[in-house]
Image (cartoon, rainbow over all chains, first blue to last red):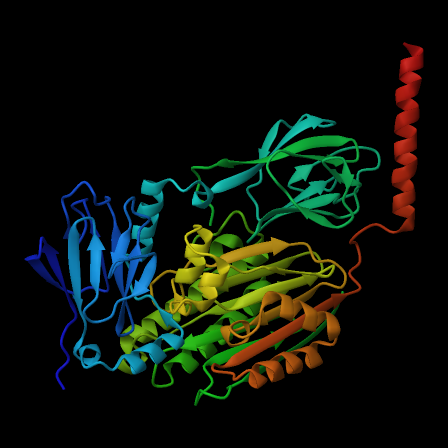
Length: 244
Length: 287
């Protein structure tokens, strides 16, 4: 059986505007002229949606567009495209024509393929994701850095927590050196974790918002922290520096 | 510091080959799980290369005390030196797999995930690429020290999807990062201080597809011995149908000196506090 290349057919008012064979691993749809499929209509976002090849499948992802992306009248965030699907963006319809294999209706085998782990094979993806983030200004995904601001007991002003693990204490190896008669070598540590910043006592008397912490606690913006006689506040701010 | 560890891999009930690879190196404190992908044995090769390369690179660099700038690629200043060794090892393994995949047609499209845990008496480093995970069980709570690099995980982070939707999504196995698919890879690396009785679980998605974080926590609380815990987790996955290869490593720590202060240190703080308040009062009186 001959393998037919998957393709997209852009339509407006039931008229075919243009056909696009899916030659690349990743294509984008939007108003911006950098898109593979450019639709010059105000209902369409700059970078509206993306279609990526994943194995023998194609996956449609809405790039957090203002007016949404629909497949057969259902709003979707991300969906595998099936032969004959209508992707609706604004007033335009994009018809998805699957590959030979899928057009034959062998949906079952395609489905079991998805059970396997696979890689979204696209080099442009990251670039696009970063563009998407810039254009949508999602606050919680932009890079934030933790800052501690000293209130009492140490004249250190504000310090950005640039390390994954910051040690606070008397030792020379501490990222933030605190002094005091009974300050331990390492009094506490602040680590940046998948869930956010966490402070852990390592032998210093640690209080967060007045409560004694015996082990560790997740830090929230504007928590007040006391280690012995040193008092400071934690918060997060946007950073222009790239955190890995 | 005392380390007890164990690791098991099982092909499962539906797959013919095992594309997972792992290593347990107590002498280095280095633990690795890799879940390979790609046809014609390529997945098995990718995961084994990744484990080998990282073990060897880490061993060599730490034995020679290599500086940050002599490792593969630009150092990450937010990490410790050991953290940079791990980062360099991942970059190196990625480049090797990537080049091999380009070279040989049979290897085209091969790749692997990676979950790495390094344990030292003063520092624990967790690094991952893809959807193999690292968990920390501490004080009756379970915490992920890894971030899944998958389409659904990214959408959960962006608030476009709930955890529940992600678990049932047909896209849950589509990764956004792995080793082998592009020239450069960016892992997530976290560093924390170890605590006494910390326990870690590294695993491939064969486990986490069929078991929730809470179930993992319960089982690890019930079974403190690493070898028996791994066996129980894998047996449970087999009971539930084991549609994928499953790999589990369990590591538990004890006897960490220099962590929280003992009795005398605490006594010291109390005296210190008392002295300080006496001083304060004395100053007020003098004024």
